[in-house]
Length: 472
Image (cartoon, rainbow, N blue to C red; front, side, top):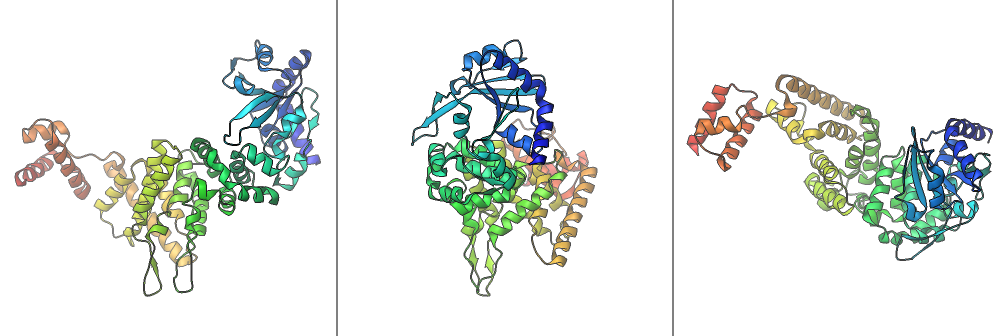
């Protein structure tokens, strides 16, 4: 407890120029003001925040009046929910009037009713570790639901009955999984039971809100914890059914890996490799590709007489399934294209054998990966979960060799921006034709020629083009 108190004191001292000053302004106007939720929780965990959430007894109009002359900028997009936002220097602050909400069982949108007490406001929050507050400027801790103890025990519990909380707002079930992934906490058994029994309630939540929670979960420090909770409670069946489907039936006669456990291990290994990316991590695209790379296996599984199992074309099938799921969850086209491409290409390396690929094959590998090449390197390396050390080392050495060849050819030929040796204007001039399909066909022919043979002189490329044209 002493460590927690010290951590909170250090963080409150750091943000004092904001919270103490605001606290005095609100107190002078006869209103309460308190730091609430995530910033209080994270202060106890020794984490810093420049985005601060506060709650107040003041109504939104009064909050806005008190911020004028203090804040550098003010916005009120959340006014209907009692929230006024502002910025002062590096600090972003949201101040929300105490709330008391009632929910329509068929909708997650609350009917906002302003409350009168801090304790009442805290009681409507999702978990006890988020239901703590520090009154300012006096810095008295308000913890009516035992959040400090739950934080110390690293457990997620609801302030009231979990059934009531999840009935009010089913998205809180997704948030339980997300916070487990972010904090590394366990979830109180009654909360897990309620999630399991009420999983179907998630269907009233919009795809966009489910997507946003899923992104936060996947990019958290411990995504396996959150994903396992979604699968164990049945929520994954409704929001990401491809994941629990990887728990394929196994029997003594047919030998194959546990695809579900393999997938979670690939995800963790991909996370370990994120430092290779220009921006480091967390990287949603790389992680979600690792999570989805084998989703085509259940549909492509075939049993052979010798006891083995095949999953032919699961890469192509999986890419289509990934695209369909990401569209249903309203992901951007860019993210959908990137993840689907990685799923489709994740087996390409295994045609490399022990390094027998021609330069032409290496060029095509780079061309097909495009701007996802570095992520493809990560996914391919992470996909090795064999316990056979010799086999694992051989795979690593072979991929090292492929990357070295890519680097060598890239230096020689600028693979990342590979183009035919003649452009469209040159093609039209040599063939004496105008714009049209023939120019596109000629361009494609020259690009394939470039892939097969590497850079050519303009004269050799022109001769090859004329020969191709004459043979058509």
